[in-house]
Image 1 (cartoon, rainbow, N blue to C red):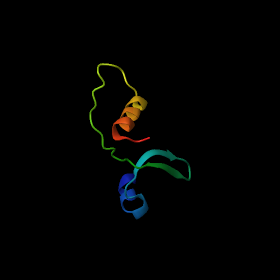
Image 2 (spheres, rainbow, N blue to C red):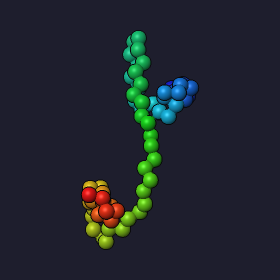
Image 3 (cartoon, rainbow, N blue to C red):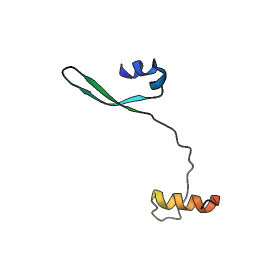
Length: 65
């Protein structure tokens, strides 16, 4: 229901209700704006890698400082 109301307003059309608090006289809704991050699968030669390793490797491959 809250998401339907958010779609009607230009400022909140891209948001979804993440958390809600209902008090005696107030309704508080924390909004989330989901986004898609383009990515691709990457092999890491059988080792464990964290996101920072992958980001550093991408920077090296793309020539970024």
